[in-house]
Image 1: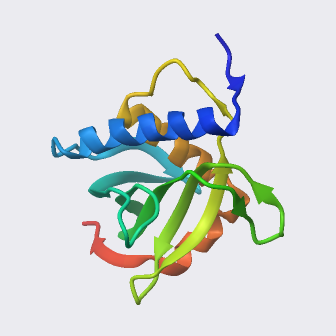
Image 2: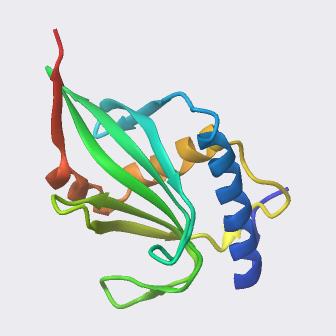
Length: 161
């Protein structure tokens, strides 16, 4: 069955279900997610923490370290995947519905939004396994025209021998 266009309330339900799957996955000390490429460079995700919505944070989010191999070095970028269950106004002034938002952390620990994917076309019947979900959505992010922004927030991790 193909993807369905869902009303806003159904999208929020699907986002909440997928968030619960990721939260469960994080609770079992997940392994890194391999098999990703960014700008033809090998990279992987290291799960860091899952933070449920609370009075300080309106939406559930999952924090990852994106590890990127570049020639002889490995770089780390802190990325948050946010289950954004509200409408969102993009930088260009257009409105996007509920969806997944990706943000990096700046030097002060503040989030800087990289991109927002409205998710009006989702499979409503069941949530994806967490690792498959991460592979799919981070691959979409890495193909986004906004991806260049994340490299301003990279931190040196190690040299490759």
